[in-house]
Image (cartoon, rainbow, N blue to C red; front, side, top):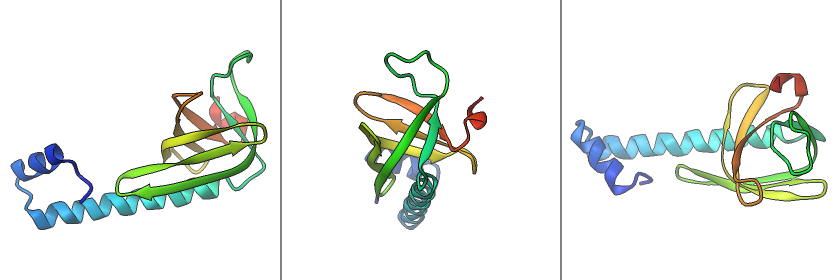
Length: 124
């Protein structure tokens, strides 16, 4: 089961039994796995654009050459690593916002939620 003790207790308080909580947990795991697959497919391209704030950047939209994204899931967690041409960053979470835009929570060196698109116009 992938809900912490507080969440399990709250779910029981609203009337769910153990079997229903397990079913909900499985649905969460399946949803996260589906998002991971969609995120992997999104980054199967040469270039993406982001609204990431970068040092020595004038702000706005940034272009990134994608080397790879490696994602894994465990229960409700999605983690991994996103590698660009000259640097990379841990991925701590992610979600699909639309067919054209995704959002990742990036770890150390960025420590922020960042939107990515294949077409920079989708970030404006």
